[in-house]
Image (spheres, rainbow, N blue to C red):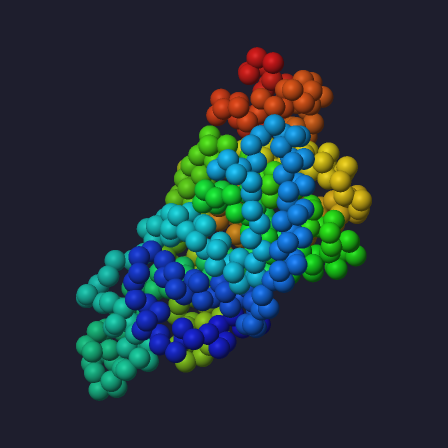
Length: 403
């Protein structure tokens, strides 16, 4: 599938390069929605589907509150379910992740080249075929095309990043079950976004009862929401994610080399240049990011290990097909493709099965040594959040917090 074929934004290339800040959000939105729906119109979610998810969420909320002792709501009211299409999930995710994406854009933008000769987006638009006069010196109103090509990264960066973010979010939307497939906090709200079409597809692919999958998604979303709703957990995770996203050291030469292959009149050329985000960004993990990553991993694997522990207990009691369902979900994690892994890498998240196992082993180790009462301490304050060495040695964590 060519992600750019038929896209309305390609009718006016000059508008693509109008600088709207570090990211062209209109391009991101259009591409994200288009990719999420695979270029087709989506049917609205059936009202009965929404009602069923709300009913199961009430059941899930009661059991999660009883098991964890955590507030499942950040507003003091019950959580609500927003059942969406894939395209709607993509649009909402772009808004939810916008502060993090802008931090990433600022980091990547530090690799842009300086602008020689006063070149701007209008000059670039003329160079790319938007009203160029063959008689003009240099082909673009007297602007040297070679100078413009050398400055493309700066002029095009907002559009390029808009394309890449749209592609990434559209990709995520085609498989996301709920709001926390990536353990990234969303804006403060008790509305949880679930994608029934993906839920139904997952159930069909693995021959699982749809209601069992619905209940699991509600349990998973509400448990994540309860943990990430703890102010100190949310603040710590957001701080680490933002610091990591802001720490890239991009290679502008990698971008320039790919842009030289761009043929504005050929949409398949756009796919070739923009379709491989890892090669396109030419970004490398910086020393500062390598310092941050163990802290970020320690927190995320602890969250995921705790959520898995809760779901194994509550889901094991409430879901008849929990055994086959948990195996299908494990396979879903292991079989994540390169697109999934790239999105994770951008934010310093390594969500491999090894890391999930690491988090689960920490939680089991705490429960074996101190029982569930010891585990309750995990989310009390920032002091109780485990350090990277403690994740691999639960006894050290228990000793530090005086249990």
